[in-house]
Structure formats: C-alpha cells, structure tokens
Length: 105
Image 1 (cartoon, rainbow, N blue to C red):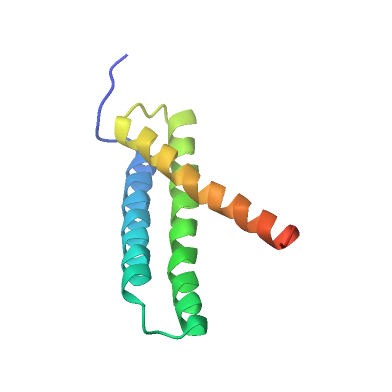
Image 2 (tube, one colour):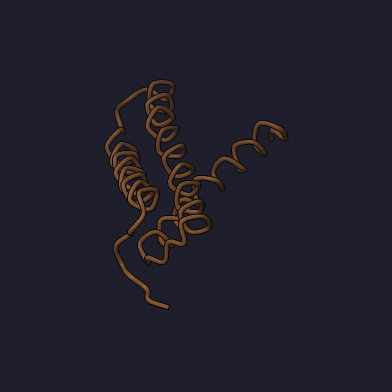
C-alpha cells in the first residue's frame, strides 16, 4: 500500500482547498477576537458570528468531501486524512451549537 502526501482524486483536492479556506477563516476569526477591543459588544458578536459560520461550513464540507474521497475514491493521501481530521472540528462545533440552542443555560 503506497501512501502519498498529495491527493490524487478530484474530491481529495477539493477537500484540501476547503480545509485551507477553513484555516484562513479561523485565522481571521482569531485576529478579530484579539483586535476588537473598542467595538461594542453587539457589533463584535455579530462580526464574529459572520466570520465563524462560514468557517464551520467549510470545515464540514472538507470533512464530507474528504470522507467520500477516502471511502469511494480509495484516496490514500496523508493530506486528505488530515483534512478529514481537522474538518471534524466543524462538525463538533455544529453539535455544540445544536446543544446550546436545545438546552440553553
């Protein structure tokens, strides 16, 4: 069994690009948390939600496309497996959001 770093399938390549966009969105999210000290609370939370929501969707999309490329396309690249691992954090965020809305504190 040969293991490659770069993906061979089209879905594997999509998964890599989606996880890169996920990382960029999380970087922008982190930069806004650090720099938004003088902004009012309502505007700050709205801005952070508008940045984090696409990041979460990109993580879920990277997870799904990577998983499909591994299961159907027999993708064996390390990069796609890492994209599936880090994309699972988007799914965890969705689960936490659903639990927060379902059981408010």
